[in-house]
Length: 204
Image 1 (cartoon, rainbow, N blue to C red):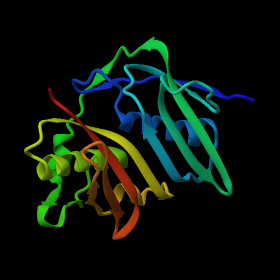
Image 2: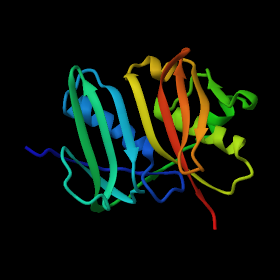
Image 3: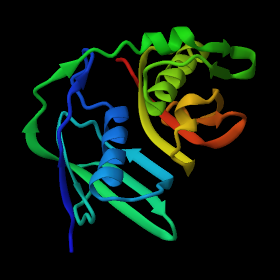
Image 4: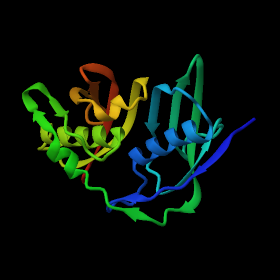
């Protein structure tokens, strides 16, 4: 039977689209709190198009992909689960402050090593930290390129634990496919747990 779940969002800062970090956090909360999944691991979430409205998550999708905003796959035990998100026509009607610059300012950049590290405790979620860190790293590595960076995919191969939020986080830039997709390794306490991907939309 097809499962359907509606999720409401608020815009971050001055953005006019739903931020990938909020989508990630709310879907994890849906899966663990409402659906009761005990141990989520091997998460692979992709953002296909920008969402400007609230989202409905479906356990199956049969469309042509034009309206597909997000896909997420993960494992619980030996079972693999997939969900797909589309806009549901309900406008986002709230907004909150998001001082992501605090994450960047607390991070230590080592550009010769293509790396950024965060060890200070901050009141942000794990996904908010690594997205802000990676954006800051890419902006420094490719400072001559004029455009906007978007978080497009996360492969998190470990189980989601509290250590992912409190441990030392390091990101190391790995590759750039003509700015259509960049790949950065994510390490927590010296253990590589996956990769985060960004895309650049160039101005003009």
